[in-house]
Image 1 (cartoon, one colour):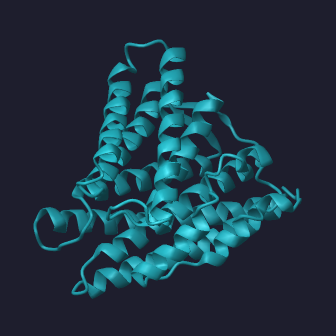
Image 2 (cartoon, rainbow, N blue to C red; image 1 turned 60 degrees about the horizontal axis):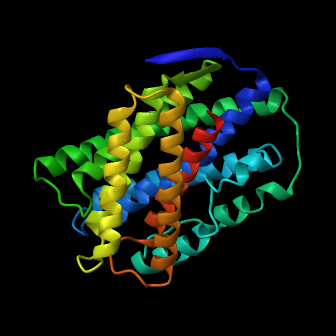
Length: 303
């Protein structure tokens, strides 16, 4: 169930659109990178498709970063949801290890976003942002269809990929959520889910992240695996309790759990970059899930 809060002003439409795209365009291109690098060499058609879609999202992200100079507020950049101090190194190491490409120049530019001031929120930028949203929506439709097809083929044993089917389903959920946000923005609607629906969506993502981390850690990493399992159980419990608990309590509990999982993900990212953790987790995936937790903590704090 969605609640329409208000119609957006031009300034809010531009700012929120750029914020949503800065976050999710990078998430989408990395989804495609992970698919590309986990498909088997025999699947040349699907590997090329993932690479093509990834590069298309990179092109969109370049545009978004260009439009965002001086518009994205400093207090939002501090959350490190668009890029973290680890992103560039994680990209460089992961591309070296896999041989697949990523445009690190975009990351370098994003790291400088807060140093430029520009405040033209007129007709021209509004039209450019509306076109950007439309292009993103069209590309998202293609990406969602591609992910669904892969998942279907995996479940029918027609293709092999070293990603869990549940992870592919997870990637579809995030793409559909992004699409839903953009469609509301294009109608100038400031729309949000009911409290439990919103919290449960993100708490479920956090629980699944913990499950994936557990499943990708080496069996000898018993302490880290136990911590991952504990986080998964904690977020699953928050989902169950949402209907029964008072709003203030469930928001605070979600915030505390997310702050804890952020620290865990930071440590994991650092450990993977230093080759101190035995796993099959690429460093960029660790940074990827860290950024999603950073994004969620900002949402919780604005509640």
